[in-house]
Amino acid sequence: MKAIPIGDGKIRVLPLAFESFGVRSMATLVETDNLKLVIDPGSALGPRFNLGPHEHEYVALARSRQTIMEAARGADVLTISHYHFDHYVPSFEDWTWTWSSPELAERLYRGKLILAKDIHSNINFSQRKRGYMFQKLNSKIVKEIQVADGKKFEFGQTTLEFSKPVFHGTAGSQLGYVLMLTVRTPECSLMHASDVQGPINEEALRLILKQRPDMLVMGGPPIYLKNFKIDEESLTKALDNMVKVVGGVPLTIIDHHLLRSLDYGDYLRPVYAEAGKQEHRVLSASEFVGQAPQLLEAMRKELHAQGPTEREWYGRLERGEFKEGFQK
Image (cartoon, rainbow, N blue to C red; front, side, top):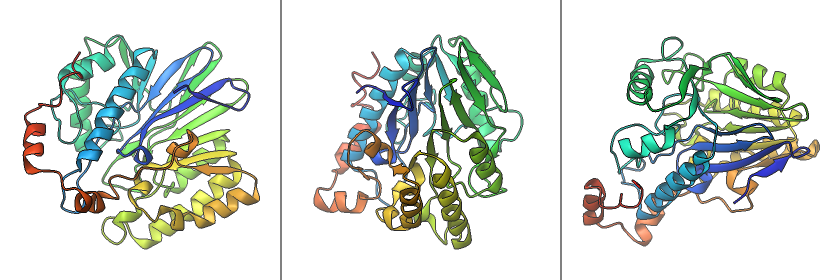
């Protein structure tokens, strides 16, 4: 599938892996006349409903890894907004959640310029540890790893502008900070706002509106965690802020955490209404490429009820019997 032009075609975009494709991810390919980059080149599965992921989810995860690897092969730059395993490929072997291995990580990162979240400031303990291991294990195989926080990088007429660190959701979030990225040419701009969850935080909202992108790729809030890890007030704030965002952005992709719930469309009704008033568009990542959302994690109960994954299948998975063909 080819990247889809936005604006006058000077920026071309292809979502690679998202919840609407059946996995946890916000991996996105962006092309300009000067540059080809992959933003957040990771994907993963997660625990849900006290059930292991269904076989269909693993098919989607394996497919996402292959799609990301193929897109990254021709990319000049890879960017990492933060060190959660659905946003980069770790350098250890795990076929249960991340479909990762040292060999896959090396294939992905070798010879690339990596623009990544700083591991020394505005970062929580777990991400600092993961970021340290990422640099230790990959520093000799990449072209270079540069800290991206709050910086601009120019590639001909293409500029990559990273935000200062913003909260992963609510202010003071224990999940730490993430970087937003604006890809800009003289003609148009794309903004990728990973894991801002709405945005819930007002500073993230201010920075998004300040950039005035032609297209925004944004993670929505985790409504499936309501009254567990996120309160109703925060979800209301996220909804209000999304209404403000889509009123000013011609095309907004809202995906990620939000699409771990089957009823995300009901939650987004005010957002769709505001976008319609302004003749703007709001889509999931899959809808952007003309496909219906496949919310496999949200459907895990139903998938297991329709055709349970056998226990022996999970044993084969843990032994790495399905990795053949992904290491070459």
